Image 1 (tube, rainbow, N blue to C red):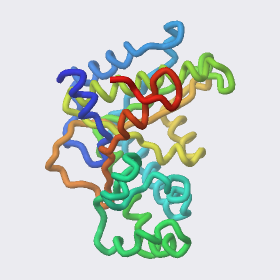
Image 2: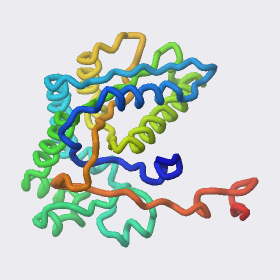
Image 3: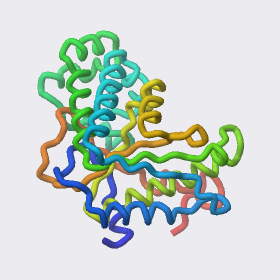
Length: 260
């Protein structure tokens, strides 16, 4: 796949992957390309933890599902991220950002407008939405053929210092490199983010992966081969919309339109 095509086709895979292991060749390709990412003074502050063992994936899946249930039940997820949710194509087109929730059970649709109110949260809980989302999250993680943890060394990642910024810039380059490589190999990728919202759950996963004290677990992803025919999750979203260059880019100084 051409680089530009991979960039345009890259997206978050919300649904399940094909039920087959990632080949040794593709796994090595992903990691070799990741290791080519740039870093400050070639410090290469990242390390990778590959998880393929079914029992370990199942453990992490249970933590991801429980984290999702708790975040939804307590309302913290909706309140923290409500500015990103769009429920109609018109809302998505008006901002060209956020996520469009375009797939949900019909029984939930009448309550969408009340989602961010106390009454709406109570209704969602009564309809077992947290448990539905938790079950989906658990299955997606535990059935993903490959999980990938990425750490940063604390020698470079020192919050409050420029070294931390440089480390995060290089981490972003690593993630984009992995994502584009995965796309070119017919694979999908998604953050396993809900455990990170609950510090004790994230610490449990870090211990489970044996991350040493001189490193910090920064990110966890799930990866696998994609197939458009696989059924979407019970509640799902898309995010293809992008802001125009006229809105994003300035020429010479803030406020000047881009030339050409």
